[in-house]
Every structure is written in C-alpha cells, then in structure tokens.
Length: 519
Image (cartoon, rainbow, N blue to C red; front, side, top):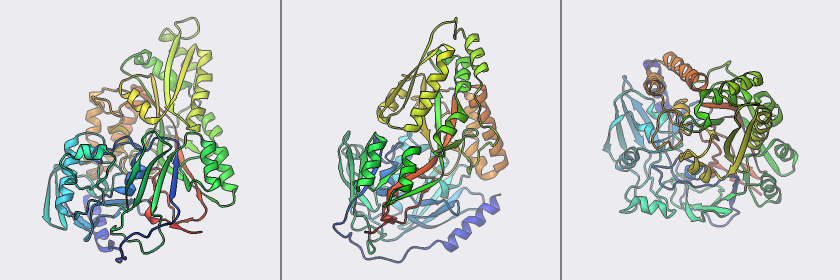
C-alpha cells in the first residue's frame, strides 16, 4: 500500500505544473457575484479557528497548499506546485508557487507556510487536529517546506482541507487575533474583505485582490456579495429578478421551477453532506439510551426521502458513499412498535410520564422543516411532545455548546475528503464540546478513532473495519445519533455564469475566480 501511495505522488509530481503567467491587476466595474444562502456567513474570522459556514467565503479569500480534485479524487496543486513523500510516508516536502503575495503585500514563502500552520496547530481548536501527526516543519529555502511526521498520514490530502489548512500572513498585525476579529483578512486568494455587516442581509462583501497570482486577464467577477435570506421563496425570486447570481440550495418545488425557468441554470450531484440528529447523552430524558433508541426508530426515513423527491438520498451508516468508512447496507427504517416498547420500558408513553423534548434546527431549511413536522406527528401518539425551535446557525450552535437541547439537527461534511472528521469531531470526547453535540464520552470509541489516521495510510482494510466498528458503536450501542439522509447538492444560478463546478469536498463553496461572467 505504501509503494502504491508513493507511486501516486510521483505521478502528481510529473503532471503538476503552474498555469501560464497572466497580467496582474484586477479590472474595474462589472456586476457583482451575489451568493444567497439561508444561514449566517461568518462565525469565526480567525483562519486558524474557523470551523463553520464562513468556508463559502474563506475559500475565496485564503488558499491551501493543495486542492482536492473530485475527478481524479486526489490532491492537486494550489499554493504548492508539487510535493513528494519519503518511502515510509513520514516526511513530506512541498515546492511552493513563486510570485505569491498576501493581501498585506508580504511575500508568501516557506517561512510563512511554517508560521501559519504552526499557529493553527497551537490553537488546538476547530479542525487543527488535522496536523496532529506533524512533529516539525522546516523551511528549507524560500520555496521549499518540509514536514516531519510522528506517523504516516496522507499529508497532501490533509493540506487540501476546507478548514485549518489555510496559509495566511502571521505578521499582519502584532495582535493577530484582534486584527481578525475586526473583520480583516490576511490571505492570498483572489478576493479580499471589503466590508462586513454582522446580522445584516448583505452580510459580507469581497473585492478582487489586484496582485493575485492567478491573474485577471480574462473576464472575472471583481466583487462578491454574500446575502443571508432565510425565506427560500424570496431567495428564488431574487435569482429570477437578477438580484442574485447563485442560490446554494432550493427545496424540491423551487428547484423544479428553477430547472424550467428561462435564464436560470441548475446543478445537481451527490454530496458528502449528511443530515444528523445528535441526541443529548449527558443530561435530560435523552440520557436514557432507551429514549434515544425510541427516537431513532420513530423517524420516518423512507417517507422523508419520498417527500423530499430527489433533494436527498438514503443514508447508510455515518459516512456517505464515496469515502473510506462508508458502510453499505445500513439504511435505517422506521419501527414504531419498537419505539413504543422502548418508551414504555423507560416509563414514558401512553399511561406513563409525559415526555417533552426540545429539538433545534436551521431556520429556513425546508428539508429540516419536513423532518421536524413528520417527527412531531409521529411522536405525538407515543406520548412525546416535540418542541421544535428554528434558529439561525450561530445561535443554535451557541445553545448547543451549553447543552441546551435534547436533539440537535445539523448538516455535517468532511474537513477534507476523508471519513475521519465525521467521527473524530462529532463523536470523540471533547470538553468543551465544540461539535460533539451529543456530548458523548466513550473512551473505548476514542481509542478506536485514534487509530484511524495512520491506518488510512498503512492498512486501509483495517481502517475500514475500524470505521464499521465505530459506526456500530455510535448508532447501535450508544444510540447517540440518527442519520436520516445524505443531501443532494442542488444549485441554481444565473444563466450567464460559465465554468461552475460543484466540489463535494468544499460544500456550498463557489470558487468565484474560476467563473466567467457573460451577458
């Protein structure tokens, strides 16, 4: 396996090359690219700590050493033009792209790569764990950086992560954390922050960075606006009227209308984004595993997939198809008799104690609203009152980190194109919980999960077996969650946009610089 892995890297070294140089300086004028979504855009400004919806903007502001290619399913050049690994997979050397500057004007070199990744590692938050295998980083010369690892991991893939892999200017300000909190950036990407209005509909505006290494010779969007519109119908009308360029997700009815609308284009493809119901294993009535199992069995999995008509597909296990760790043949089914029996055993249900559960979910998400509506109706005859609260993501997450709900509904996608983060971040013990919003504390599961990064490189069959054991432990033994579906990526955008391609490793991200605006 190691020899095949090294051969793949060698092939990349032979084929990777830089694009031809383009004249610099961004053009002026032109219509903005207006991206509409139903959730807040920025939760965290610091690229070392960023771990939320701001990925849609940050992937246009910051860059990583590599970028995951959904066609080849391998890492491709970005800030690094080539790389190589030692035969044991514990030393990785990256050759950097020359002529790259940060938005601060400073040069991006090996010392900057070393400094930014070391700062991210020290943060010990968000997705910083992706660098846990790194023991040291060495700047060999201005354009060469070498990583020494404690154990082998696919570092070219790690370096493509949607979070915690950003390279940024650590010298942007003496107090860098304060600099970022003001809504500033220190990236090298094609766009830089022009304005931020937290809580406003036009929350974030980006403008072209004139000295971007990728150049501006061909037609490009020079302004990017991110709008927060929680009403799906209004989001669609903005697109139809020309006030929006791109809507990241529409419900089944609106997507059908968009598919037939003149002047609108649509995109539909499988994603790596799963819907999860995380059950509060630490306090409240859901501490009882019988109650958690009852709610698992009460969900109308098949009915939801039918109702949502193509916007979702059935989930099997925790990790979606296409990634190591996917477990086929585990599509869950509703079992109301089992749910009623489990509730009776726990002392609830008709004739037992009343049971009230608080569920939180994303405001403006039509698919999650369908889930809530069906689950509420199913639980009512079982003597369970489901109180559902639709919330903006930032508010929902803050409540979740305080353990303030019984069921937390959210979407999850991988930090990079690998299955580990579905478990390592959501179900591994964590204090404070961050995204372990089932509050699961299982040392046996933790030990199993800790073997996965190395096994992924050294023994993939053993890694797959470990993922299957983790899936069984989380869903069956601990009943810490339910996974009702995997989302289908359905986008609608202005018909004049050329060059859009969906990349499931960067969910909902539009790499705006790659687009070509036309009349």
